[in-house]
Image (cartoon, rainbow, N blue to C red; front, side, top):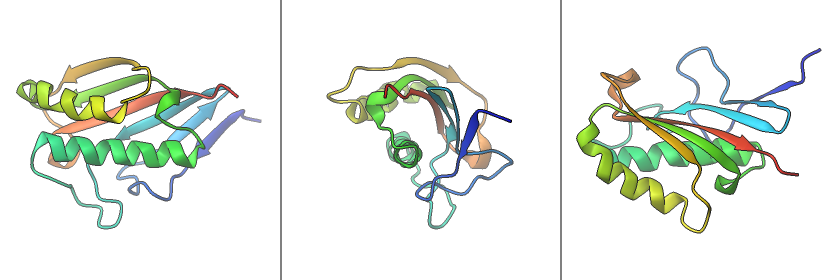
Length: 130
């Protein structure tokens, strides 16, 4: 019997490949990388890094909410950018989501391409303190 709980979030886009929105193992919740996809239409939101970053973070918040967690529970983030010249504008949006919370550890990786032509993808690891 597995001690892993698979989470499917109603407010996040339907997976575009075979994966769960998140998996909880012990006190840790591992969130799958989210894309800037509109949960209603399953299409990419926005043409620039700022709009796409907002969409990605909103999708991650929806998964956190389904797990009854919030941004304050995020201990690690990995961001994937297709254009590192977007780094400063990405950071400006990213930081606004964590305003008032301690920032999680983070890695930002430049990649050649992302699924569906997205400019950004982010995944999280969250910790359930209670």
